[in-house]
Image (cartoon, rainbow, N blue to C red; front, side):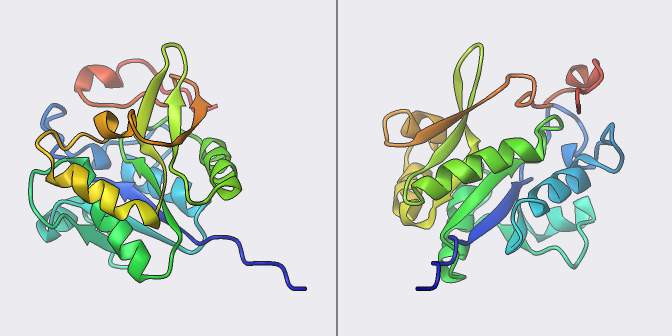
Length: 204
């Protein structure tokens, strides 16, 4: 009997934020290991998602601002200024129409996150591919709804978040079924302001 094909996973790089606190697009910041936050994040996702990787952006103008290569597909928010839940929802719709089983999401502003961290998420998801799997920061514990895998079957759940008054994935997911994978606080450290760029990044 032939083995069943592994579930198809779409890699989605969330890069649609305004970077208002940084004062310059975070995606174009130089990464300590070379390239930019954008190129580093793309390579990290491409190492895990062989099927396809897309970048979630606010608009076509945003694509031009970030100088995203034409070879990299992009998805655009259906409405402006709706927060990251909009990017997650649009990506899930795209994945469902493309025959994918789920989406692996990572933001562009996590320079310390490792390929191994993403592989740990993928292994957990393959054990139960109909369940949301999210990174959980250690010490202190905190759910990270933008680092995780969402099955396409939860698209209506995320649509309800987008249409809610709060539009908060964190608030919604705390009270809904999901699995978690522990990842260290340092690897989940995000960069929001110039002050966050002070200490050297730990990429070991």
